[in-house]
Length: 508
Image 1: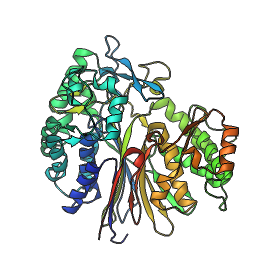
Image 2: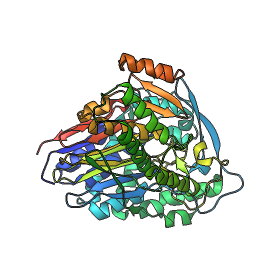
Image 3: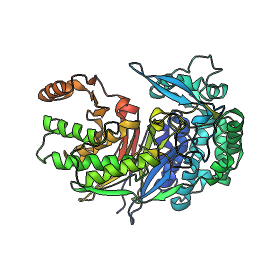
């Protein structure tokens, strides 16, 4: 791939600025992605944390993409008594959702090992340069924006769960009001940890003070993790899932993650049911989208009429469900292309957060063991020593004409439908990248349809939707409910304003 402009799309302006600074310092796309993740841990605190995990796709100009799995891992053994595990309610305004938190909700974090693996294989600049932007943000503070203030409101019980989590979120104590929009949030302990990580690598976390503190807390107060869990954790390089759709080749997250298979299943159905002459937003278009979503609606299962390749994917879903519990968590995504043509699509998650903070390092721990979908047979029934099966779906799309797109999304179960629609907008309707991201979305889950910008759909399409989905939820404006797709293409970077994303394009 020839030299090209550099593009960056992330979930926050400060995250994008960190990546841009590293690129302008001479770093490559992987260096920039590492710096962006670290900055996101400060700027997007409820979505990104070194106490969580992630997945990345990396493509160099001369090689096919490779995938890094640094997601969370279940403990080797279960604590049977006196576990610190309890429910909280997240308030979404029109609805509430139950989450479970506490030390027994914490799975082995993988993101620190993942950043080390990325840097060792692809990094160019030394770590002390990569941590610079995040350290500055952590010490000087980041102004709380409206989106992240809203996440604080939704997850307020987690913020107030412990004195440490309240302080971490900028509260004077557990009873103090939430910080207002514009409040500067600092995390100097996180900057101190990053300086140690820059010297000692992942040992600074797993064998250092943070890991020792995590094990001690679990032993004393009811968590599952032990020293052996931290010592044994490894980031895993995997071969991406690969398939064709229309005039493009796609790579995405492979098993044990679900996202790539869901996307393959959906696009396969669209290719069979969406003729080339179909008009954008028509009844035929919408019907094909909803049918494709039904195929990947795990609670309903794959349609019985599926055949051939779809049956094989159905069998894979069943196999993974039996061995790798799925998680549906809040996430953030980073897409970067450098001037040399290296591309990175990286999605990270901390779940909702467990309410447990490693105070000496400023790291909120994940609650990956704390959701109902993970424990369909009852809480605590997860298999030991297994990589969790994430819904995250970093994806690379390469068109036959040479155009490449790197994309991914936050939004838990909405990731699969958001990416399917953006990719269809690009490949079926030739929209620009920003148009593809901005277009109104649908989402089907448990047979229930959600319709974004319902009034902007064609009149005949609105009638069909209301006739076939009378109980549908309609959204009058774009909403973070429908995910947050941050992507880079051959000519531009585009971020999803549903989640106040930020994109920038750097000249040759």
